[in-house]
Length: 396
Image (cartoon, rainbow, N blue to C red; front, side):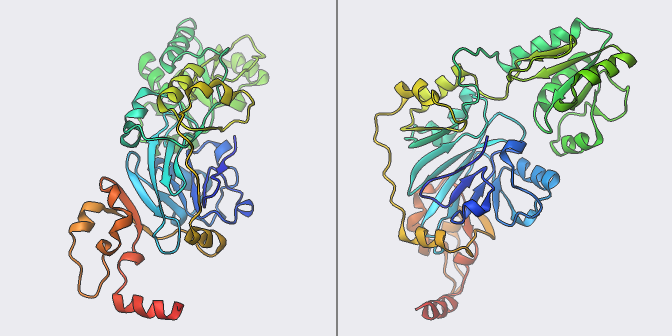
């Protein structure tokens, strides 16, 4: 699954091929799975907006310099500028995506209308209680994770799938239990199993380092033999390894995934535990949101037809790119850096020092977001008037 450049904007989500998006100024990362980070590395030199958890993992796992990582709090709305003057802005709200640690959806509001980008997500009705979505505002474009968009595929809830895994383990009381995972994800499953079976989960030192960053319950150990549940990378569950593991001690392997996998060993068990929404959950999500249009994140022919009857009859917002944004997108030297957050109410009440331009002077374009925690350019709102006048004369 690759990312997207949002048309008619300087915004990209999970898209890191910078040579193919010279006009993009704001880069957003939904989560740290490798199919969403291709192109991100220690050489990346543009600001990346993401959740605080993803921010820590991004530096730790891919060595992206912290000066380029811009964490935004989940559940709050933030304002970023879309041009050099700060007159055109985008309001961004991060919503927990219920997929893996740090994963979020992005709700964008600006001159282009309202766009919800889900990234990978497992639907929960509580998602729609987020204030911007609770207000039932019109979603012009829904970028939808349609990984499991197949009415013929029946997926259990994660709780039901966890119970299936517990039943398999209970039928093998003397076996070691190897669980195949990606680099990140399904940590809550491991914690649940460790507590239920009262055992440590054995992990590699590298995985333990990441787990400590997530501040999970202390159920993980690196010492072999300390517990009977062993977390390995999915690629390690092979026929050869199963033979080797069983030579040393009776072992079964469990792969928690909704992907179609044909086990090549009798002791490999595939359980449909998924961190992506089921078809039924997608249907409920779309029917409640009623977006004007849908863009599937996974390219398929049928996805949009499944949800056509749930789309809003409201005409999609017509996009006109402001001239200042066009200029911003054309200037390769302009990147959004040096951002700082201010609570709006404090800015309104704050009295300015003599000769300093204050936020009140630029209030009209943000007054509607009084409940938001705004992200704004510090330099824009703290330049002395005299300095600004000289600067303006030079520009003229």
